[in-house]
Length: 168
Image 1 (cartoon, rainbow, N blue to C red):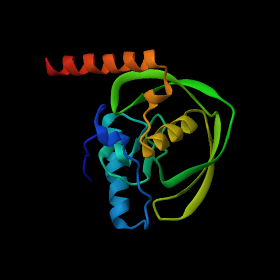
Image 2: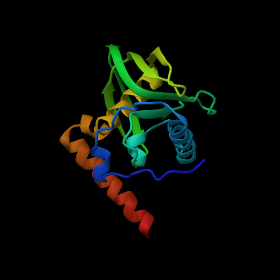
Image 3: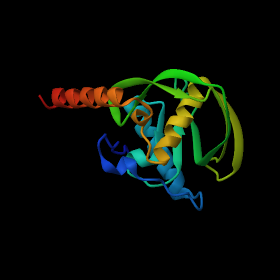
Image 4: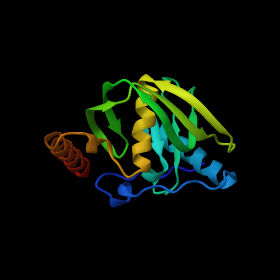
């Protein structure tokens, strides 16, 4: 497996829309494996392929405390939403930045698994948040896009400050 480079804001590649996966084959499964390794190495709970400069509709997630619930979704689509929840979110492309975002409380997801089989699942809580967050990435939408202009500016300044600190 290979560790992939996670794009950092303001990289314009994060604004690209991902293309559907036409066939789930060994090359796609290799991408999935590399994405899981990268996500775990970075301490994340979700990663969209677009964040590692792969323009495919692939997401990996694991919201468990001990990496025991890996979930891969390919060509995901949310087929229903209900309720509202507000939780703090972070992002591997915005290291060190956390802001409260409004998301649906419960969702129903349809996707392909790593074998190319179609499945549906219900999600709520942190898993629903993670799915919605990562699916935004596939559309070129970042979690800060859901914030007020003031909070967006604050998040960008915090990220710049953290980057300056890393350089010294």
